[in-house]
Image (cartoon, rainbow, N blue to C red; front, side, top):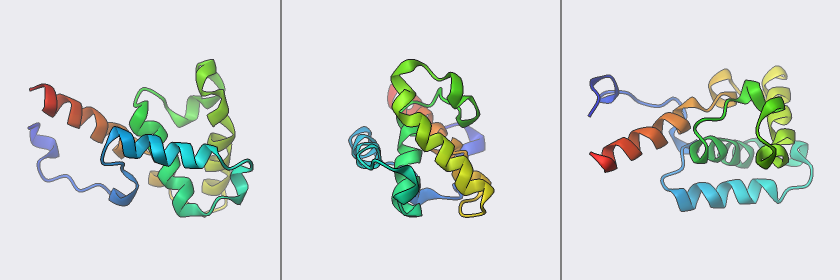
Length: 112
């Protein structure tokens, strides 16, 4: 195990999917909602974090230039930044790096 992660505790562990299947389910539920602004914060963040667990190479700041396959997720990125600007979600919730890091960490651990 990488030493820097031995004692690391994520700030928002409830939003980190535990598996690929769970991440797909969470993201699917989110994308079924037609208007991103109508989703309550918890399901929104579960789906938002699932996107970055499934695709750890994405970055929220770059959503306007994400590959075409992610264009259905662009409204959700806009909504994340709107909620962040309004103070509804925190910086660490808007930027779900813990989800991406966890996915990479799990893959490295499984391949070792």
